[in-house]
Length: 443
Ligand code: ADP
Image (cartoon, rainbow, N blue to C red; front, side, top):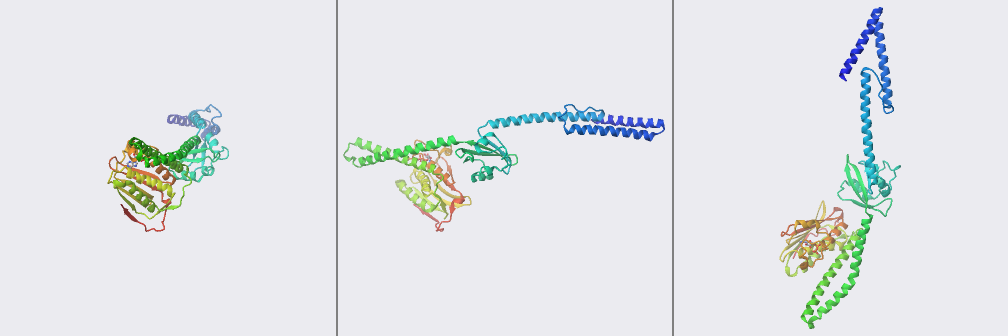
């Protein structure tokens, strides 16, 4: 380009010198120079006009305007740049069309919003599952279209580790699972999955377990009752019948406990929305459970200590909380050898209320800890026979805590004892009427 420009300058100067010399020959050198400059100016103006015309719509004419010297080079260069730009634009457009086609083929709803939640783009499934309309909803805030308060809080919280479940605003019978990802400058990619079928299956499973448990309860009560009567009057029977009756009585008692736990679990699971939020005196509740635990410990003479370091009460369902706390405390008794120590503490801080149950028992291998709250999961399947456990205790604890917006933390090492801590959020704490009940109660 630099070379062309020098050549252009040279030709122009030679041209001007030529017109000046012609003027000098005729006796008017200044007129000659003026005529040369005027011609050059007109020519340049004409090229500028052609350039402006072409730039107004470069794609209308596939050919670049033809010209001499630097203007010819300029037209060629601009033409090449324009060709490259058109090619890249077409490639990008094809790629975007393909992405849109593939996301439109998805069964999940996909929505893109900016950081404030203004809707920028969504696929066909979003129209079907969430009822968005292409013509009117562009630029609308998504939380004005999905009006559930839980969605607005989820959107604003920016903590998207767990998905959110809600009913579709357009078709309430559809259950959606919403997952949000952040990208760009806090823009959001929202994916909504239809999980109605999964929910139906889960409901069918719960109903089945609950119905079977209820149906089994009456016959089992009858069998246990008769077996108990038989066991009480078995003195006259031969020893082998006495043994058989006692074994049957023990096993039917185990089945009764299992059925009771199954019914309790399905009640806690299905009653997730109907937790009674009256304030519960945790101090008194846990003190009673510790007393029962001492009875359960019996000849094993565990040292059971309860420390209530906080006077706060807890908003929650007392029956459900009793089930959860007693499962943890009775487990500590079951899995701690005779003479061991069990420390229970209720305390609060800025993060909420916490109930800790610590024992010096058998402990649990790390590999089992993530799965302990699954139904029927046992860290040591051979051990439950001695303890008479059903394998449902920690599942009950987990669901009670879910119903109370809480969580369970487990620390344990094989042979070194365990600690189970129930965490409750600060919103669930209330001042108790007698806020000076801080005390220590030892066995
Ligand atoms: P289970 O009725 O068998 O006690 P849980 O659901 O209450 O069922 O507990 C699940 C498993 O977790 C138990 O089988 C046991 O292996 C382990 N576990 C629970 N609590 C303790 C504890 N305090 N110490 C050692 N192991 C425990």
